[in-house]
Image (cartoon, rainbow, N blue to C red; front, side):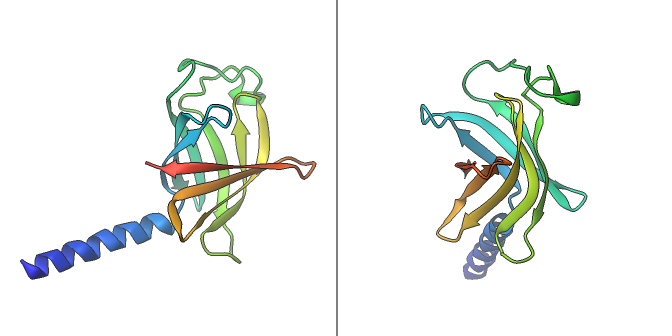
Amino acid sequence: MKYLLIILSFLAISELSAQIGSPEGRWTTTDEETGKAKSVVEIYAKGGAYYGKVVEILTGNTTAVCSDCEGHKKNQPILGMVIVEDLKADGDAAGEWTGGTILDPQKGATYRLSVWYEDKHPDVLYVRGKHWTGLYRTQEWIRE
C-alpha cells in the first residue's frame, strides 16, 4: 500500500509538471467589465506551435459570429474559432511563449501575443495582447 501511494504521488507530480511546462489545456477567460467567466479556450500543440480554439461560450450569445473579422473568419461562428495562432516557446525564458497572435472576436482585431505563467500561480496563464502602437492589455486565464 505504501508503494502504491508513492507511485500515485509521483504520477500526480509528473502530470502537474507537464501542465505547468506548457500552455496546453482548457482555460477559462473572464469578462473584464463584469468579472464573470466568459468563455473556455482550449490551447493545443500543432506543428511546433500552440493554437487556441474557443470551445465554450459561457455568457452572451452562444451563436455569435465574428462580423468584424476579416478574411476567412468573417461572419464565422466564434464557437469553434481558432483565436490563438503560432505561439512558440520563448527560447530565453522558461514558462513563456511569444511570437503568436490573438484575435479579439468582439472587435475583429488581431494583436501580437505573449503568454506566461508564474511558479506561484501555476493555474493562471497571463495572456498579453499587444497593439502595433505599443499599447497592450493583459488578461488572466484560469486553468480548468
